[in-house]
Image (cartoon, rainbow, N blue to C red; front, side, top):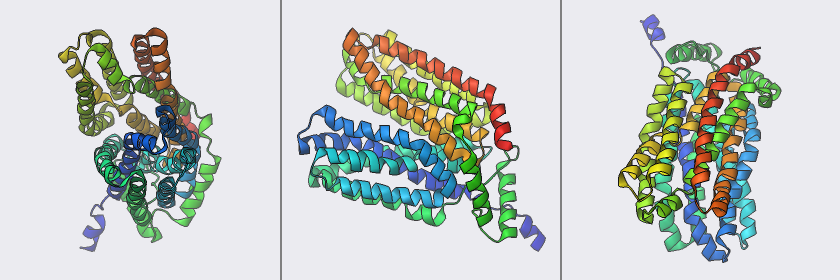
Length: 436
């Protein structure tokens, strides 16, 4: 009887980590999607220009991108059990300080810098590093499920925040949601979070978890033991992601995809209005496309687990490429069918590049250095945020239309696809280096 009980499969603790990751990404989605609500309120409150007010949020993405490699290194060293609660505290401090400013420039310190450090710390880069090792054979779908938390935050936060801002002002919005985000990020992560396990990618999820459970029983401690933490910390200090060819190819793929996305998405409503569509019709189309992503991310994650990251990435980027072509070639005259096709193509493919590149990084690198890797790769997203929208606006000012910018965006999609396949060429060397 005792023997039968000892051989009974134990529950994968990764499901708890999945729930925590989902909650963390609710915070990230809530923070990023709160910006359109705060922008007009802050502009009215301080009387600044639209450009200056928007610069607060652009600076947030810029500083977050610069800090990402450092934050990834810190995650590898101290682990998520302490990193994520600290992030919740930083968000709380940043948002409450933002609620008490008397001049707009102070928001560049408290919101753009301090708060950004908090939400970047528990965002997509850390989710990949923390969650993927718990599901070595199904990391794609699990990252996709977790990433739907981002969409959930986007759906919930704006209407509730708008209600608070309308009735009580933007300062109350900062204070209330600062507390909400802290409560989501800090207590449960401190109580339940564990350092990712070292797993063998050749074994199934259940086999890896069985090995971890045996380790737990023999050591009479959790996965995050003192000896293991010491070894992990030493590896994290020695590892230099910038020396990894695969990391550079992942960064290139992330940057080109992010620039392309920002070039098109930031100006897409303006493009549609010039093509003859109404503003509300255009905005409704963008919203409808976003609904597709809730189901598409787990679905494509499953597919990438089955047939490979590169193939699924190519399919996703192929749909993005076709969506751009539809916009360029068939939206003139406000054709409804072209708008519907665009909604379907972009809805299914939007957001998949970061998800699949994170899963690919987790395929190559062990959990004890994955935070450092994702920190560097995340810089590509920051480059896209900083460059894409400005480049499209500049080309529009010069040419009077968006055609050239969108053709460049289409070419960048193809370059991103090529970079992913280049990762496959150099990843063998990276595996050998990290195994030494």
